[in-house]
Amino acid sequence: MNIHEITSAAGKHEQRDRVGRGPGSGNGKTSGRGHGGAHSRSGWKRRYYFEGGQMPLVRRIGKRGFTNAPFRKQYDIVNLATLERIFAEGDSVDLAGLVARGVLKSRHDRLKVLGEGDLTKKLDLRVAKISVSARAKVEAAGGTVTVIESASSESASSELAATESPASE
Image (cartoon, rainbow, N blue to C red; front, side, top):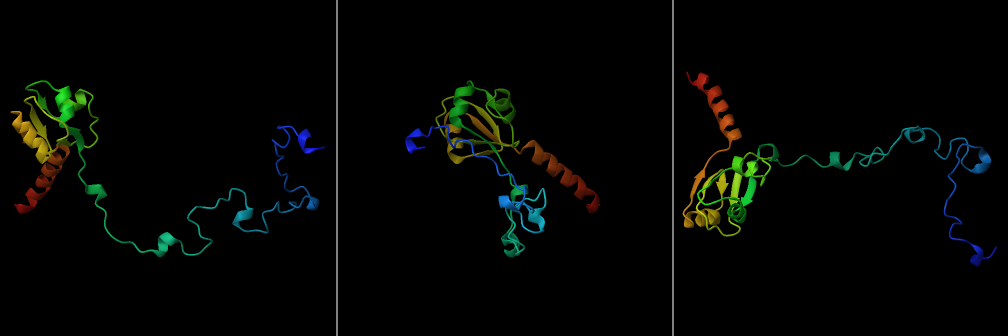
């Protein structure tokens, strides 16, 4: 056989190793897994964080700092350009109206308006937060801005007030 006689199909499929088939194969008896230990057992899998019994890095480094993640306030964001496109002159803009029109999916129960784009229509905004530039553009167009608390924070504050009132009596 010469090199020019080899077809593209030759060597394409490599035979799998048949382990545990006698000492002549080089992978007999223990099937290349060594003598005992977890690695020789079926179902063994090296965990990515395992360091061979050495104290893992994540446990060697101490805990440090604080995260505010469970308590942070997140907002559904919308720009003035979107409000200009979606709403008509004199409309009232709030989170429920944006969700009803399919502009937002209410993920955070709070609406924040940012000042990207221009506003020519007079709109009545009821939002949890608004940027300084957005407020200026809304008021310049003759609209009004009402800053409100979200429904979830209102219910939380009313529950807090209810729990504190009996203690003060």
